[in-house]
Length: 215
Picture 1 (tube, rainbow, N blue to C red):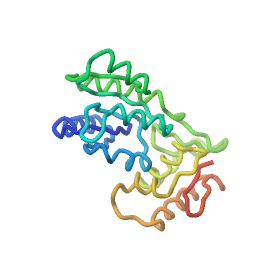
Picture 2 (tube, helix red, strand yellow):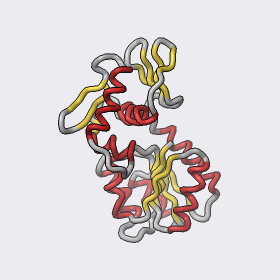
Picture 3 (spheres, one colour):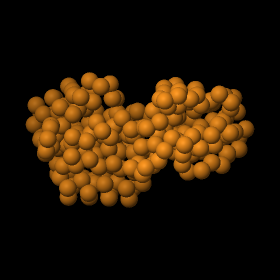
Picture 4 (spheres, rainbow, N blue to C red):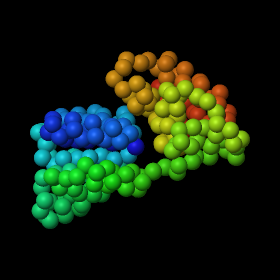
C-alpha cells in the first residue's frame, strides 16, 4: 500500500509517517499543501490522508479539486473538526472516510487498509493464457513458474499494471521508481527492454515522446 499524507503539523506528520512505514506502508508526506498537485500526477497512491486545516489552502478545497480533476483515489479526512456540518461537507465533496483528532493510530491503520481495498486493480492481471502479473505477491508467473526480474523493473511494471490500458507518461514512471534522483529516459528504456524480454511480444507499447502502455 502507498499512502499520501497531506498534513502541515510537522510533529504529527513525521510520527504518522514513521508509524505507517513500520507497518510496511510506503508513505509520501506533504507538509506544504501547495505541492499536492505537483506530486499526484507522477506517483500512484492507494489512499490519501487529508487534514482540513492547512497553511495555504483548506482540505475542503483540495478535496474538491481532486474530484473535479477526476482523481478517484480514496480520501480519508483526518482533522480536529468534529461537527456534523464539517463531516457532511466533506462527504458531499467526495471524501470516503472521516476520522477526528485525537485518534488511535491502530484505528487509522485499519481504516486505511479498508479504503485501499475499495480501489484496487485485480490482484492478478492476465497478459495472455500463460502469463500473469501478481500484484500482491510482486511477481510475474509464466506457465505456473515465477519469472525473476530486478526490483526496478518490477516497480516500472507495477505502475504500468495499475494503469493497464492507459498511457503512463515517462516522467510519472521515473518519478515513481527513482523519486527525486536525476534519471534519464535511457535508464527507463533499459528496464522497459528487460520487461519486454519477459512478457509476450507487444505487451508494452511505446508512445514516442509520451510514455508507455501495458495492453
